[in-house]
Amino acid sequence: MKAADQATGRLPGDTCDRDWIWDREVETEGRSQALARGEAAWERQWRHLMENSAFYRRRFGDAGIGPGLVRLADISRLPFTSKADLKEAIDERPPFGTNLCVPEERVKRVYQTSGTSGAPSVLALTPSDIEMWTTIGTRSYYTSGIHDHHSVLSTFGAGPFVAGHTYFVLARIGARVVPLGPGDADRVLFGMRAGIFDTLLTTPSFAQYLANRLEAAGEHITSLAHIVTGGEPGGGIPAVRDHIESVTGAFVNEVMGIGDIAPSLCGECPGRQGMHFSGGGHVWAELVDPDSREPMTIEPGAVGELVYTHLTREAHPVVRFLGGDLVEVHGGDCGCGRATFRMRIIGRRDDMFIVRGVNVYPSAILAVVGRFRPRVTGRARMVRDGTNVSVEPPVPIEVEVPDGAPGDAALKDEIEKAVRATLTFRCRVELITESGFGEASYKTRLTRKT
Ligand SMILES: [Zn+2]
Image 1 (cartoon, protein in one colour):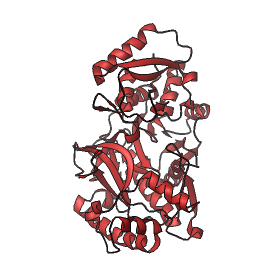
Image 2 (tube, protein in one colour; image 1 turned 90 degrees about the vertical axis):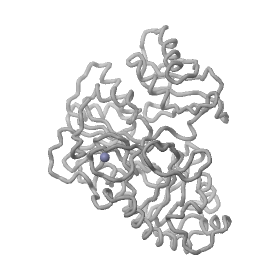
Image 3 (cartoon, rainbow, N blue to C red; image 1 turned 180 degrees about the horizontal axis):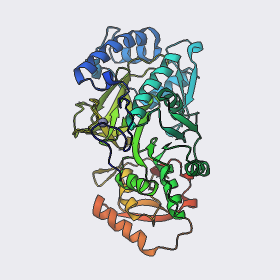
Image 4 (cartoon, protein in one colour; image 1 turned 45 degrees about the vertical axis):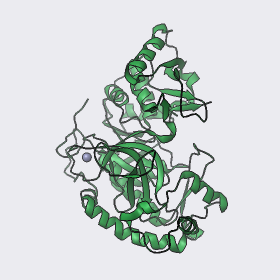
């Protein structure tokens, strides 16, 4: 594994003389300055909501909140907004919903949501919203170490999903861009061999898939310096990250975003101590207890659910949005000089299950299964009955093994023992070949509901 230049927050081997922090003023300011910046923006956003959001006027009214400003410091007085609330708003007045706060003719870009938790929905942006997303995304990807002298192949499609906004970000950074799209491994490998890019943006599932292919072919690629993963957890799981690095020789770190808020909201610097929050001045983040939803302090070691509020969004502003990601806030000095909080995603709230009173996330299962490479591909998912969060052991887990691999009678037993030893519950492993596992290796659902 390559060591990052911790003293500067640059990628290993990057000797350029550019500042490694895109927005130094915002990204290095302390909590009180960040709050002051946030309050100023929020005051305008509040007026915008009161004047233009039928949706929030009604929601706040229902919660007994009048039109007088509720300051950002007191934002926990306001009700949460869930994904289902936004869906309802869209259904009430399609296509843009009662939560649209600008005349329709000001909407200049529309993304769609994947509908993993229901029917697809839409996200509308004004030119100012497009710019805001680009600003935040540029901070995040620049944090990862991408500079203008890099050449970046993106496996994110331009649409319909918000990850396509990354193309605006790469243009803003000034990098060379090699646009591709999801799932086309042959073209990625062609570009790698031809040396037309040194940086790859992809999901960790796809990065693993590429690494497995290179490994199986015994091929050594030297052109790749950096892989930035996003779209799902994985780039921060050591078993996943180390394998991708050892095969590709590239430095791996990750970014994350959330469609309803901003597509690239946090980015991990080369110090690799979790992802920095990049939303300063545009998005306000809170941490709440995952069970009671009471506010928590964002401090090292805290584990909770992140809740987001737009400070400058015109078309589809949200207030106290429950993002569904459970995170752990990281401490210590990452070395890059940013003062923004850092975190790692533990799992999606929806993916969490409970075995005998203990919360378990599928990412923990991935970390155990990953140790069995190359006998496994690194992908796994747990199978559970649609509605039940509580699962009785043995927990059914499907583990992907390479196509054409010889029968491996001992493997199932060894994985079951390792899960028992590490995670303390019994599981029942079923080995499934790549062709049977499905989902085209791009993004892996960590839970298969029956
Ligand atoms: Zn850092």
